[in-house]
Length: 125
Image (cartoon, rainbow, N blue to C red):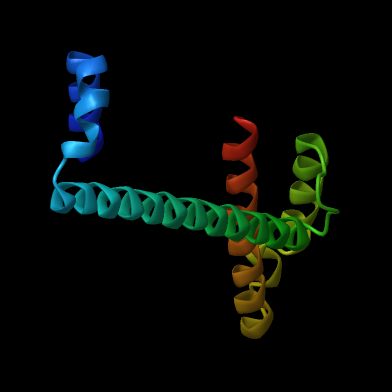
């Protein structure tokens, strides 16, 4: 807010403002400096938050590559092939006679579906 006011005054008063700049009250100047500090802190916090989000996304993506048993950076075609192979291997219907294996296969297939849907969104498929 003070930044906008300061710029408006500077634009409207031009050279007169530069001469009068020393006559700004000490309290107003301290308020302006506090505003600038707050603004810098907010920018720093925003940068830190975006860095943390980016790092979390990278970790999440690494997990999804691991679920699909692929190296990081695999192409979407490789992801699709791995998904089809693994979903066929761990499909819950294959284990309908064994409740424990059926439950484990159900959990694995859910993880596979989540990972595949993530990559579908990422690659725009």
